[in-house]
Figure 1 (cartoon, rainbow, N blue to C red):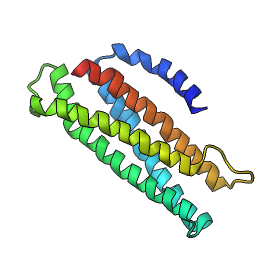
Figure 2: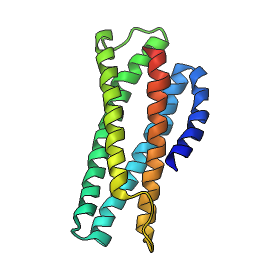
Figure 3: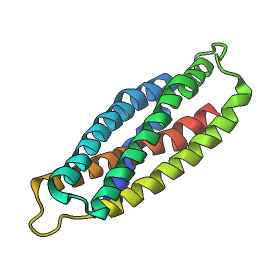
Figure 4: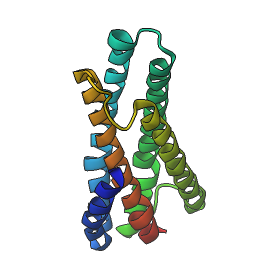
Length: 173
């Protein structure tokens, strides 16, 4: 199911290949980073509610909450680093300004980001397995909201990573 959504989203993302780099960076921050932060807040709240209201001390629900917190913490740090270091460098370079960060730092940083994208995708897949692909029969409204939040974040995560690694990074480096 998510693969079919990704194929359609992938086609829609292709128009960014020809966009100006400042417009692409602005889209990544204003759309994907903002939405990810909002959705992660929702996801963390829902995971905590699942522990408090539905799960009690069940090991799998506690694990899901803890993995959700880990993913969100790591992804927030990742986005912050992009916004404070990588994107300003890319914008400076694209606009013909002297970069504020050393050029020698950027290639290792880009490799680190590629590795982080892979790690985040792997962690998110694990998180999705813990949450489940579909609602159990008689699932609660909390379970419905939790699953929807996972799906929304997953869809945006794919788009975010695609735009950065397949379009922005290839054009900037």
